[in-house]
Amino acid sequence: MANERESKRWNDDQWVAAWPKRERLSEALTPSLLAAADAGASSGPRVCDIGCGGGALTIALGRAVGSKGRVVGIDLSAPLVELAGDRASQAGAANVSFVVGDVQTAGLGPEPFDLAVSQLGVMFFDEPLVAFGAIHAGLHPGGRFVFACWQGVESNPWHTGTALRSFVPTPRLPAPGKSPVGPFSLGDDEYVRDILGGAGFGDVESSALEITVRAPASAVADRSLLGFMGVPSERVGEAEAVLDSHLARFAVDGGEYEYPLAFRVYEAVKD
Image (cartoon, rainbow, N blue to C red):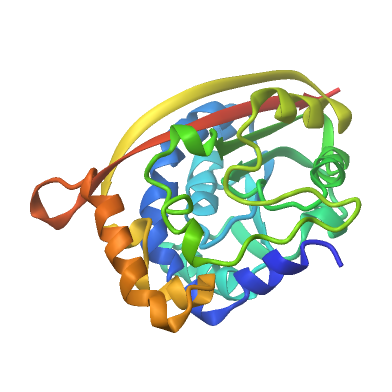
């Protein structure tokens, strides 16, 4: 099954309930991604948002393309797609719609798009070359693919994975034919360029960007998810102390934290 672990994770009620807290990080990347996508440059474009999550970027793209454009958000998480639909209704985003689906297996749909955009949604494909090929197939000739992904974990010290490594089970090796997935799976620029080229994209450009965002501890370390992550109940208190120590280096006034975020924005064209 494609992306089986990610499908289970992103359809888990507990995991999804914590997502709005973590959007404080993802939304900080949105201005850079919107500038690169330049979705309103043409009249009436069809745009898809891959791994749309709660739909914030999708709605922003809808504003960018105007009433003549159309934007479709695609995500394998049914609960997040429902949240995205509710948000779009509240925002009056009539040119935005959402679909539950896995781009790796289902592609972008029957009608091609002019632009595909993704904000931290492409690092979780367990066959990235297949997934990027499906995105390529779903674009018009000359269509653009613009996405943001994290740089390596060494450039993102806010991430809690290293601090909690001794508390959680060792990740399983990918099945034959599958690739490792996770927030930093596309952290190597050469590797990403190879995948894009292998999928048929050309004119690949990437920009390494760094910003700082102020957000609460729960944006990176939601304590309610420690058990979900595999921390044994008898070690939760110990893990919480480690998290406190990890976060202390980022503390600022007002009970919030300043996190240095390092990411890349890629632009590629379907030849």
